[in-house]
Length: 410
Image 1 (spheres, helix red, strand yellow):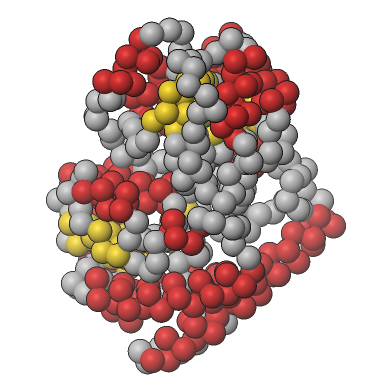
Image 2 (tube, helix red, strand yellow; image 1 turned 180 degrees about the vertical axis):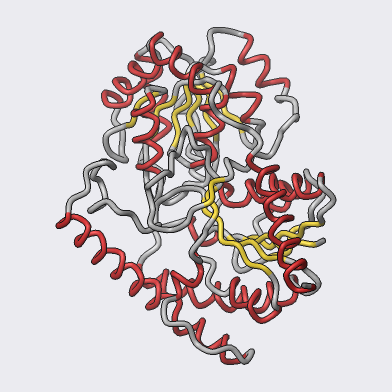
């Protein structure tokens, strides 16, 4: 059996596919991965022995520099559609199933349809899925008739937005391979039964969407890499530091994030560990209470820091939660405000109010995260998080293909 996995997005979109590819191999299924051609993504997949099939432009080239505009989105969308029809059309030959995730994978299901293979859409959070609750920002559990109407209007407007971005390119490429047009690109991509690759403790889904959602748990890539010797020396030289990193955030990273984080940590008498990341975080002086890391094993590192200050990506949130380490989430875009709110609701850290912290506001959030009560709660929640989501999803994919084979031969 052979499966094609595809995404276009940041590391948080690529690493789960590496975890799933590894889980598939462990049950005898070959996995191919089509993802952006960024060097670090190729290195990430190489760790599990899966070659990267390049798809579209590099993500870093798109998100670096100034913040993307609506014009940029209308240029990128048809480019990605064309890349999927071309690249996936070739890579999916001989495959039994195609699983797609990441930035609106318009074009992926179309390829699967043309080849007559199984298709699965997976997501790592609930943002963007239809909800029975009335509007963004309203806590679940308080629906109202008027609110449902408001939410339905927003959902219909979202479909129109997706059609405007992707519809023309999808129609053109479908016609070129002999497929009829689709009226609603977003709903066609999502299907009626998407998979949610997120832990149910961190991201409860029961009753949170109108779709027949299947929750597998988070797809975690095991990491046994040792920490660099220089980092080990820094960790051993004093009390656990505060980790600060904004991952693949580049143009969206908070202004002066490193300076603010260093000053806030020092205010609380804490050392600082900066993750350079795409935001290029760097020390503000040569004091020995600050250390900078590049690519590193976060699974090994997070259990040795006092708190994790981050942007609120699904992967970083899950890794910190599994490590029992309190968090401060400074959300920037997309699903990040959701993860910030979950961290606060679970009592495993603090959600920073707003995307641009000051020394005072970050100090206050860190004070909350560093309390003994938060640490106890973080340890309790960590015990409830499952680490087998990738294995669950791999077996489900195997079952999906097997069931199709059985029905075809009946």
